[in-house]
Image (cartoon, rainbow, N blue to C red):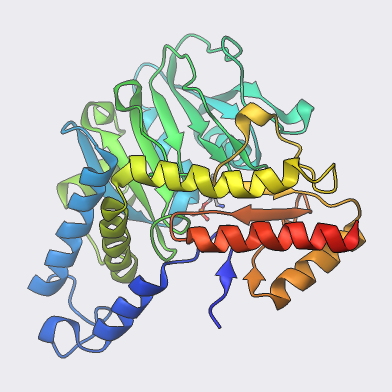
Length: 360
Ligand code: PMP
């Protein structure tokens, strides 16, 4: 039986894509080799690579003055590359919105490198909301404002684009392509691919070319965005399997109506689960300010930790897995990424109703 996988990443991928990959795995396009054995300079792989990156541009709607690149190492690598590349010019301060664990970690890595500060923090409120209008405070010399569009652990979503004199840098790891990107206010967008787009191993990054004018010359090539752009992300051997699967996933997203289609589908899946929470008379609870509830990571608690344990056990027995909350906060979390079928969200919602009826 195939699991309904609500894990926060690596994510579930649609069965049809896995089967397609399986069917072509041992002999890709008549090469006599699998995709993971082909030379990354071969015509077959080059076609896969170019198509995946061109689909990334097309589906995201990236303007011509942005480069689209893939970089090994996931989003954590970007926590380092962003300050290394962007804090070289006159404006040397990186501002960070800290609305959860990931914003805090991004800020921590930026501080190791240079001048970075928290422009807003939700920590004292226990990470339940995003900043309100006018609450973000930037100091002079700020090069960028880094925001996490969706805090994966707290299940908090930035619904409004923050006001900022500095260009925005977005960590969209957990809601990449499930919402429009505000290109005109943005210098860089990135996300680990393992939630909405592909198997783990890299980040997809869009960067405005003019933002790379002051990259320090001492950076090793591997840490320099310009190298990825110049070499079309094949300066060295890239994570070929992730890129190949990302191409398939992007094609599927395009067929689902692109970002607008995925946004609708994701909101619909989230509605199914929040409805059960809100109509449970407090049996299930979600701590997040309603306006900032995540569409991709729905967190919830049950009345006791014993009930949560039984819930997770019963769910797993029904094939609903990956529902345990992050270890730092406990409770439960349903991740509803692009690859998760609506049918899986519907099953979860109905299981939750059933469990409450039998246990409350
Ligand atoms: N940012 C966010 C919002 C995340 O959810 C995660 C991973 N859960 C990361 C960054 C770190 O990503 P990676 O594991 O790709 O380094």
